Length: 272
Image (cartoon, rainbow, N blue to C red; front, top):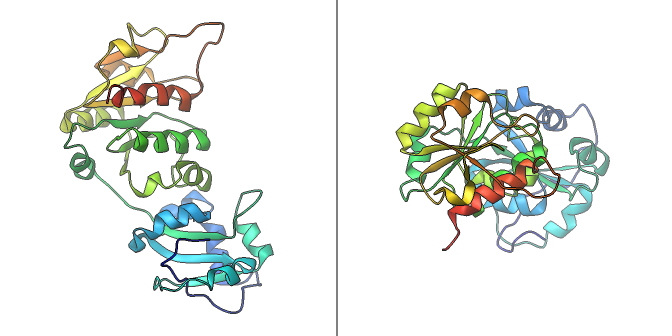
């Protein structure tokens, strides 16, 4: 059940035709080029829609599966947002989950720049840099962890999977609504951005001279999480202020990207 205090305005008759314009639009938003064109994306699931409803300006449309509508009629207050109901078959075709929860929202992309992140970093907060990460689950999990660690924003370097894909949005569990995300093309742009923010650029590699706990990662750092297979690019490593390692025992050669990111980022809250 969605949080008390919200009444979803609904239409009595569900959409059943694949020729319907709303259904076609929802299908298109599963593809990046249409998300870029419309500056919208899909946020699926009860908890994530609740998170989006905290700032109703970001919601363009709420969509329900027909078997959800009766439960939502119990709510009492209006959001003022348009709502459409899809037949169960069409709703399940729009989503890419095995067990869809029956509710999703079309959400407006928020576009940020250096000033937006600078405003969030006034208390010496760290920022997260994603360098060509490819796994949507990793990206969403890392962004969610960054918020939990008090980070002020996220930088996505060229080659990183778009953070507004449905799988990333689900894994981020609402963090995308709160953490400003900036997209950069080149290592030089990254270095300029980090310098404007007054942060140190920190890269993790197996041959880093310092163990991560020997470096000061608590504040004013931009921590780079590299590609799952090849790690951080040589170009970004070359401009880093510090290269650290995560000591490992046994025969494992590396950690999962989201696990390594959590180890590094939680240095920001160690000792608090």
